[in-house]
Image 1 (cartoon, one colour):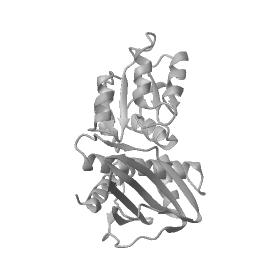
Image 2 (spheres, helix red, strand yellow):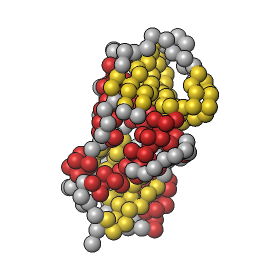
Image 3 (cartoon, chains in turn green, cyan):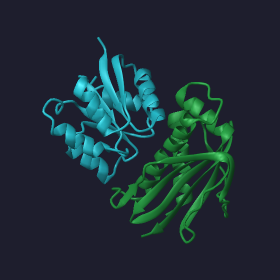
Image 4 (cartoon, helix red, strand yellow):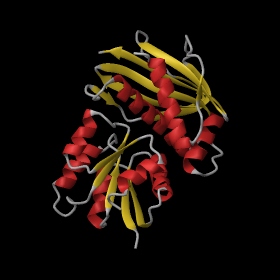
Amino acid sequence: MDLAKCISDATQEIFQSMLMAEARPSTPLSTRSNVFKDSVSGLVGLAGNYRGMLAIHVPNAVAMSITSKFLFMDVEEINDDVKDAIGELANMLAGSVKSMLTETGTGLKLAIPSAISGTEYEVECLSDSDGAIVPFNIDEGEFLVECYLQNS
Amino acid sequence: MGNKVLIVDDSNTMRKIVARSLRQAGFEFEKLLEAADGQAALEVLAGETVDIVLSDINMPVMDGIEFLRQKNADGQIKGIPVVMITTEAGTDVLNEALSLGAVGTIKKPFTPEQVQEVLGKFL
């Protein structure tokens, strides 16, 4: 299973279909930072045959731009709309990755998405799990999508 | 005369996207109603007659599967068609929704053309 390719394919499809935007993937990162600054993160837990998490980490300015495109309205601050939009992006990404991981989806459940934001916060993941972190570039800036999975 | 449609999704963003996609697909509405989960959808349906429900599956409070079960148990609203709009396409959860009477599915992410193709049979 090429998790980085799953992330790359799912992210490009979602941005093309829902935002009419090209999300250009870069080389997956070999190390991750737990700390994110002035960003919004959308998170979805995975449980069942695998357990783990999928997350998207988006700098504030990029998150506001994405939300503006989703809602067709100006967005000038990090508010509930922005957190909801980034959470929904994580939800769609997790659903797509789930479909790629299992033919029927049997034995793999998605949690309700959540989102956090702040000037500086930490997002930890399972330390002994397999994962991939893929940076993407859109016209408004960069963001990260990461997924970590562990066989239950 | 347009249609009355109920959109059920815990994401306000997704409810707005679905509504916009319906308009972009060329559908016209007399009324567009929203609910944030299955329980809220049942409460809407207790007071409104709608032509179709578009529902997510993975929601807090009451998910789309339980919503279908409870709708089917209520003779007043049992016949209202429900299309699932979900990330769960191609999975066992979606098959369960279809076995409970969901009349169609739209996978997130979707385009207005895909919405038109599925809902054109019902609206």
